[in-house]
Image 1 (cartoon, protein in one colour):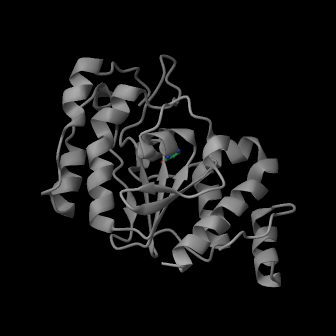
Image 2 (tube, rainbow, N blue to C red):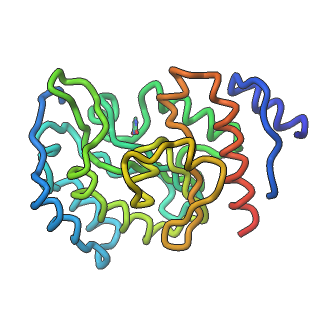
Length: 235
Ligand code: URA
């Protein structure tokens, strides 16, 4: 570990690290399963960026649209070599229309900084679902299967347009949705080795909101980011 990296780790407030290996507040209804299966087959492969963003903005493919202030399509460089994928917008993101602008977003920005990256510069940040999922008490919640299915084709088209070199999946929902795995798959079983999305390497790490609650796992997350960096650099 060189001293430059140690300085960056200090900035992130991290402890010991591993060495790099080889290289709206309203509750809303959701679509039923039958409807979601049909929605899942949606194909946006002919859309350019403007058409895709307009389609996301006007989307009513699941019940999440009814509670949203903004659909949050994503932000960044449309030719980025890095794609970071989160779960779905929270309250701040719904209000501002941009992903990861709340407390978890501040940590994500610090993680990017530690990798000598920055929001919007060779990076694109998107979510599995584009509208904020809330529970019956108006609190953020993870998207359910049908909502993920209804939104999947949007992220697929974003990835096809961006053609990232590496994708970093932030948290279990992002990882299992992206990789088409059973929702019960544990995050720990997915960390530490590269996966693949249509030939693009995918590295799974903790969601920044989890790291805010469990800062002692930041060092493990740094290890994941180092793996992603090595995959990025070798391509
Ligand atoms: N959490 C996410 O997964 N995505 C966001 O945009 C904000 C918080």
